[in-house]
Image (cartoon, rainbow, N blue to C red; front, side, top):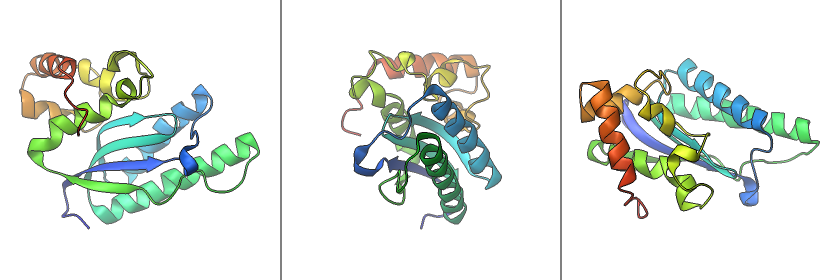
Length: 178
């Protein structure tokens, strides 16, 4: 259990590393539900990256509320995928995993999460991956994810300056060991 207000890295993986998304509508539905379930519990989403067989979230909030939100989100997604594709059984391998993040480790963690598709060789740059909050970080006008401003305000109070710094920081790479 983490202290209230902690920043946490959440990971959930497909059972036997199987795909947890098939069609574009599956990815879109998950994002919509994720935003809803987390905000319903008062959990602030700072960043996310959905991969074909796992997800990464960076959130801030209360552990018990996170547990509730993740349970509903993952159960709902499993039921939806099983019904849509005529399957049964577990979609996710186990309960989600969560790791406490230090304040100084926040920016490296965001880079690690957003560069996941690059490390997996699914895309050349994080800009090319549609299923993460990376592009939102580059766009000062974007209100998604809700906690993006928490991260960017640590860089610079000016959202445009912060987004420019973030762009350069992402280009440096250097997250392979995070």
